[in-house]
Amino acid sequence: MADIIGKFIERHGEDVLEALLVDQTTRRNIICADSEYSDHGYGFDCMDEIAIPQLTGKYAGLIRTRADKALESQSHRKRDDDEQDDEAGGDDGDAPTFDSRL
Image 1 (cartoon, helix red, strand yellow):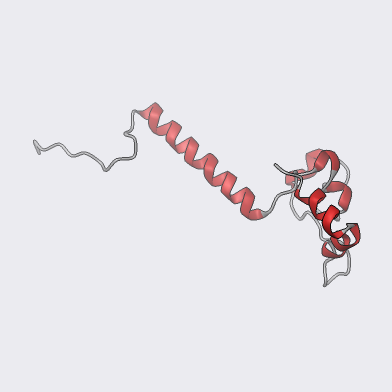
Image 2 (tube, rainbow, N blue to C red):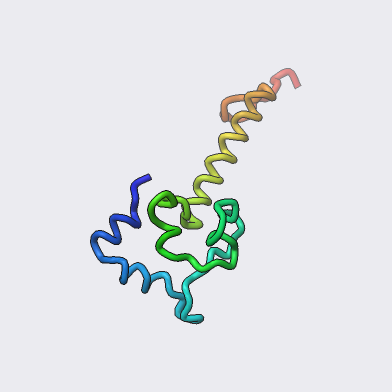
């Protein structure tokens, strides 16, 4: 995945990114609000504020949008379903076949 945040910083500067990370209600940086990233250590717990270091360097591309995660999850579910069909001897997605002798 391309370093989108790095390219954004090159084009607009860190100060613009810092402004975008601020929650307009609390006037603090937005939070992860998800424990999905907590295994990456300090700064990635669900209540930790997101800052530029969590978006750049070795963490570039780690935090993704809900839409990206949803697409990946959908892709995994489809792949898992296909594997289960193969294991069960299912067809390749064509319409169900009926026994004409009935």
